[in-house]
Amino acid sequence: MTKKVLIVQRVLTSYRSELLQELAPSLEQLDFVTSQGETQGTLKRYKPKKIKYKNIKILTLNAFRFGYSGDSRNTSLFFYPQVLKLLKNYDTVVLEGTTNLLNNILIVPYAKILGKKILWWDAGYSLDKRTLKRKIIDNVVKIFIQLTDVQLAYSTKAKKYMQTYMGATNCHLLLNTINTAYFESIQDEIQENIRNYKYNPENIKLLYVGAIEERKKIKELIDIVIQANREGKKFTLTVIGGGSHLNFLKQYVLENAVTCIDFTGPIYDKENLKKYYFNSDLFVLPGDGGLGLLQSLLYGLPAVCTAADGTEEDYIGKNLTLHKIKDFMNIDIAMLHKNFNYQSIFEKVNFKLYISKLENLY
Image (cartoon, rainbow, N blue to C red; front, side, top):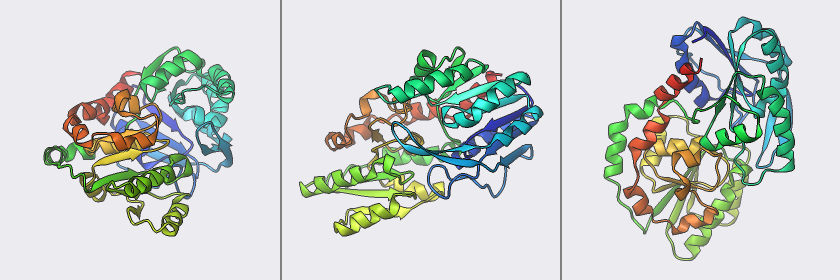
């Protein structure tokens, strides 16, 4: 494996930092480039109190921020051309893919000139219909991907897409995951909770954990829960997280005098989160996402979603995703728990396996 690696992202998040830091023991240097990020939501920059290994640096660059309206969500792009000054110090550059295209257009050709090894890390495209905008983006991205040495795909679906439309010729599946060390440490507790689960149709507890943004479609989920309860069902919904849409949703629930919805705000401590997962019947992801779904499965809580980010087909299979989120009302939750295979989930996304695969690509 090479000795000095630079990982370039729009924003360094906690879940990504915790995972990738595990590469550090086998490297001379592992550095992360991040912009200042945003004040809340999925693009909030991670500010670690303590870095686990001494050979890691987090390099925060001043950036120009641009809003971008994609096919499935609105997001922000950060442009920091000063990253080019850093490239000469590393053997390998790992790039967040299409979502960081503004910077990659500069980084890829320059890194190629310098003789650096380049890894392109991408989620591909998960919508069923490939729009004109996406076709144009793919044709631009293809020029730069073909200059890279290795392409890493977040999911099986992403790998197929990257090979078919994005010019990826040396593409490997590296399933999007998080640091699973904590879940490994409590596996006995998780397995015991799974064995002791009892379904109560008179009090069905739904859970959502993640960013509270419009693209997550939490309002649609709230409306479905409200309607179901009006029809005589017994649902409650706990919403954990923070974001730009939180105050709107709180006000919406207040104005409609709804008592079956609870907002806790963001909770980052896994031990604190554990009690919510252990005491819920089902995790529901009504909109865009992926890692929130994975976290639920790692806690031993079955999950359903519509189309997340392509990884849902690897995590839980096509049979448990839904065409319309309202269809989750008809799911046999008791049977879902009975058939839940925790060990198979954990084996797919164990971070040790993930790190091993990444190391073997060098």
